[in-house]
Length: 364
Image (cartoon, rainbow, N blue to C red; front, top):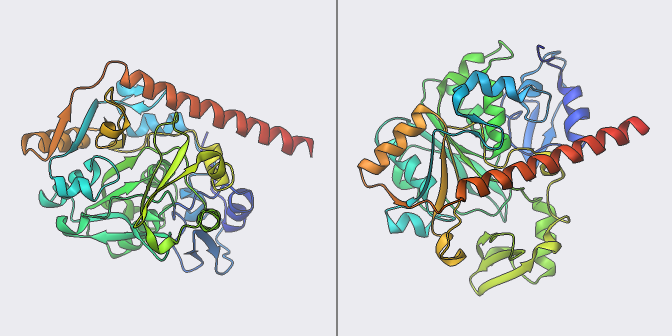
């Protein structure tokens, strides 16, 4: 069945007012009417277009995911747990300086840098530090500029808004690093559901996705860190170790502060993330997350798990291997199955929440 494209008013009611906005930025920089401000999409002015790109591209408006996957990926590669799998690896950047400036193994930075150097892309869109804990999407054209931009603070960076801005200029080959919801937004754009400026998506050349369990509210996380006596200006990075630790680790100039995860979730997790069924950024060329190794977390956090999904992704990984850009670790037995199990668990939980929410609406 063909998707129904609605307007800005419907987007506000169905997504933002229902607390389903992921902060992905897909509806920003399409027109002057919506902007991104302090971790929120703001409706600057009402719009009277009846079939809006903002609604069509939003990852939280209706779409048939199975049809979308079949349209964008080889059917033989599709799995119900984590989407298309063309290859599965454990890797890290060979360049130690890249690893030091990255969240884990530096694989994403290394691959994006290589794509720029080989002119597979001419523009890389990545997250960068904004004011305080806020994140912002930036466009870079030199591989050297990607270093030290790989750390996460678990606040959404509206990278799709930056893609929309760059796509207006035209004539680019754009690579972008995205979260799962952002990868879905780009996938919806690729089907060109609205004819207005539909050609802009043709500039999208490479999509690298990040594994994601959830993102945090900038406002609520700032309040929590304040209660824990942490000055935002002192924060150098954050991490979430495997679930058995149940911690958010905050790296500051004065040392590491461990915050129990039950203080973070549910207080700081974005409500929209509770309804997300995608843990591994399924609508990408390559997906990257932290590794799990038998040597334990202290070793594993220096490596990445990598899912290759497309021919382009495979080409880039092979090039990184041949040029010594990435180092490859033997894949521990059972790693792929554990990843699939974790992903299917997230899907199941999200679907249960969606079902419960719909039941509550029907009762009212």
